[in-house]
Amino acid sequence: MNNFVEFNGEKISIIDSVLDLSWKKINDFSKIEGLTHSLALRELILRENDLSSIPEIIVTLKTLQGLNIAGNQLTKIPDSIGNLNQLIILNSEYNQIKTLPETIGKLNLLQVLNLNKNQIS
Image 1 (cartoon, rainbow, N blue to C red):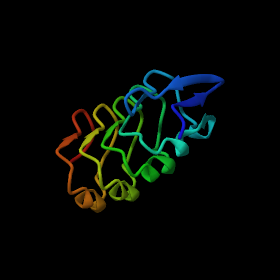
Image 2: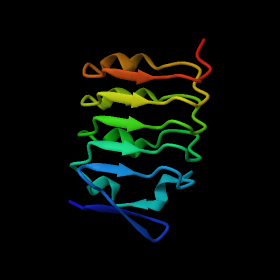
Image 3: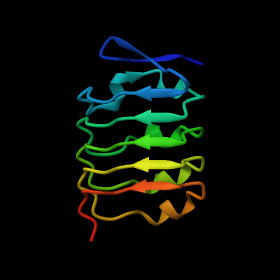
Image 4: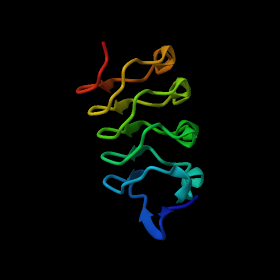
């Protein structure tokens, strides 16, 4: 298990099962190395990047309890979000999300869903 991931040659530490990749101008998740080996990751913060979609690798992080994807350019949340059955907090405010997938109903432990400042009708 890695205690860091690598992005553009920079090693970023995972501290207390939290990985904060805020403000890194990430738009291509293939440049992040080591994320799949971060089995104990509990919280992933991707706030204020350039993401237009949620990378599929994120929904393979089965221990994830908190996901912060606020302030990106997301237009939808993928159906596969329902695979994150340990998710308690999903913050996706300040995006351009129009609808939610039905699979969000599978998130039985979800306590906080922040969708402020989106385009949901």
